[in-house]
Image (cartoon, rainbow, N blue to C red; front, side):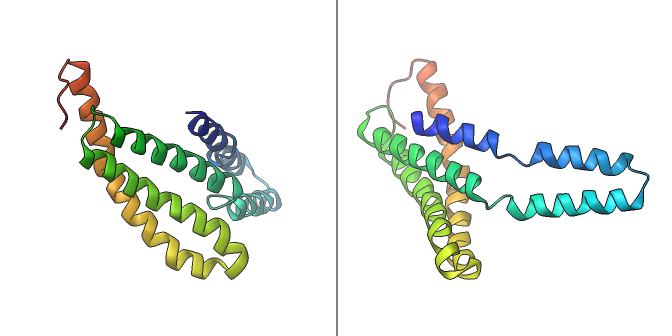
Length: 151
């Protein structure tokens, strides 16, 4: 849980959305073309450091590590089926592999190789997570209603 909370804090701290909203509002209100050009340059610079920067990668690494650990604990528990736990390990493991590959490959080999290897892992892992999260939510609803048997 500590890893997850630290990861969430990193996500909040490195979120570019608020900065982009501010720059967008400033751009919309600007009447001077030179100032608009400066705001566009600031936005481009912000985006250049953005979504694949150190903060989001660190947050992804922390969150996905926490979710792999939670999935392993689910595997050992009688409350969740082996299928749900294994799906969580695979889904979050692929996303964790993506974060590791981006962290290592971008500085060592460049972004092209990291994207070629990491993005398919993210697609597959993300798609599997779209199945895993509803299954876990459904299981929590069942447990909340007092149905203890595994699904």
